[in-house]
Length: 170
Ligand SMILES: [Zn+2]
Image (cartoon, rainbow, N blue to C red):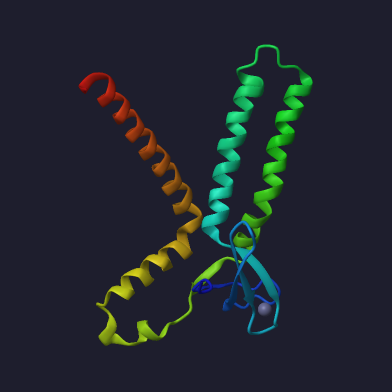
C-alpha cells in the first residue's frame, strides 16, 4: 500500500511539510512512517480511519459493558463501579494517545502528485479514486466510524426486514 498522501506538521521544528515515507502493517492496521525534511524528526502515525474506529469501539464497547455491569445491575457496589471506570480507562489509554499524536502532527495539505499537475488527465477514473483516497486520508477519523455505524444499521435493517418478511409476508 502507498503511504498517506497527507503532509503533516513537524512537532520538533514546526515545518509543515512532513511526508509519509513508508506504510507499515502493525498487526492491527497500517502505520505511516513520517519524516521531516528539515530536521529529520521521525514519527510513526496510525491511520486516522483506524484511530476513529478504535475510539468508536472503545465508546460503544465500554458503554455496553457499563450497561450490563452496573446500570442494568441493581446490586452494583463500589467495586463494580471501580471495575467499569477501570475498563473505560484501559480503552482510553489504548486509543487516545494515538489520536493525540495525529492531532499534534496535524495535517497541513497533500503531497503534490504527478497526475494533478498533468491537466490532460483530469477526467480519468484514477482521479476519482485518488480524490476518494484523499478524502479518506483527510477525514478518515470521522468517516470510518460513521461508515461503520451505517454498516451496522444497514445489517440490522436487513435482518429486521428478513424477519418481517418471514413472519408477516411468507
Ligand atoms: Zn522538523
